[in-house]
Length: 165
Image (cartoon, rainbow, N blue to C red; front, top):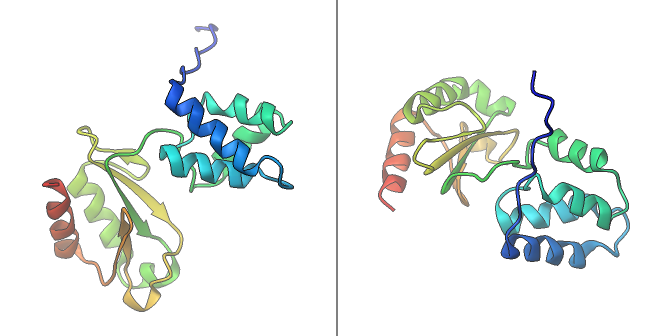
């Protein structure tokens, strides 16, 4: 068994600057951890592992506390996502309207599971637990575009349109 600790990823200057900007924006507010994490993810599209000790130190928290929050909430990504992020709703309304069929089709079409990215880096597939589009179930969001009443054919049409951009 290898007991050598994994070497943390190195942060480039731009990434470090974005983390510092997020900290500067929220650090003085009470209980700023979630706001900082959201700001970092908004800027970088994920939370780099090497950001955790920086955020912990700046907020006077342990690395374990920051890591625990990042890993607890499904919203936070720990790896860079693909060019297009597809979020499929898993709430009751979408499940009742054949959401499980949509889940299976999406995974088969993209040849990935949830919270994975296609080999070409184009698509990341994520579960979300409500998109607020219950009247149009099942729903998904790709990037910032909400789509309702999805089925296999509509999914394929949306993906095909994104494959060419």
